[in-house]
Image (cartoon, rainbow, N blue to C red; front, side, top):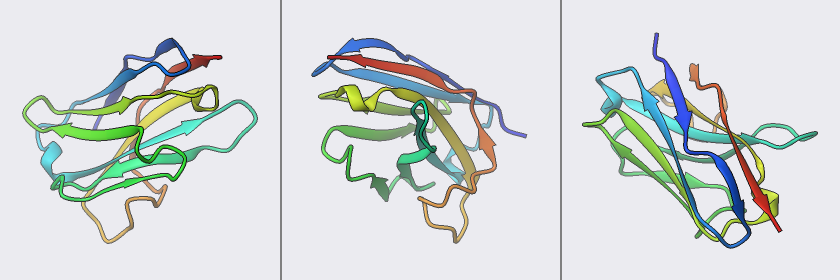
Length: 124
């Protein structure tokens, strides 16, 4: 069992930046694919981005490409989502998710472990 705890969400003005973190309980983060998802009120959960277990491959949704960056710090067992040039439409609860390396595409939502989420609100 792997616990994931997100932090760093909050209220920010449009155009601003936030970095949210996902602290994991595993000591072998280097063997896990990690995903970031978000869910806005009244909308389905969607993938924001993901990073392969070896850090050599990432995916970003078109809506965030060029603005968001995912990184892994295996020594700290933590994954980050740096969000720049935030827009009101980025307002959502953000979740991190984990699964051991597998043939599933990074964007496949069948992650095994999920955090509780952190609220990000972008004001216009």
